[in-house]
Amino acid sequence: RATLVVADVKTLGKDCYVECDPADRSEIAVPALDLDGNVFAVLDVDSTEPAAFDEDDRRWLERIVKGLSLYAQG
Image 1: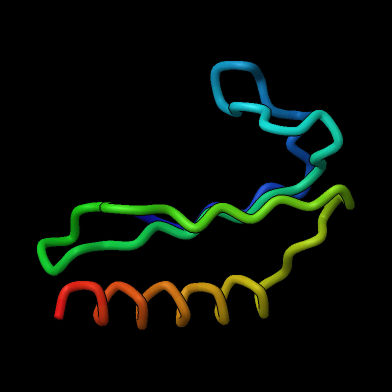
Image 2: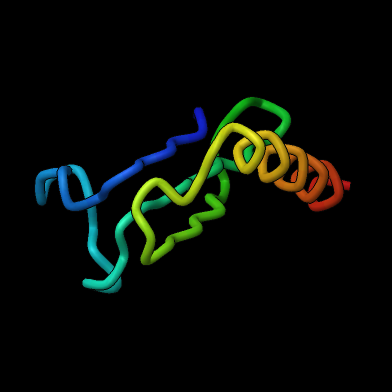
């Protein structure tokens, strides 16, 4: 239920990270919550650059996801 920013996905074990592209190095995952606080979707953005995401990215992506969540729930 919280945004996850991973600077280097290569440091995560196989139990913690599902690799979609072997070239990926960093990731930000932002959950979309329904009105009851349950996750119904996740915006997952990957980069081939290590440490590609910062607090500005987190803040803006969380705003976008929150707006889309409110829109989706009518």
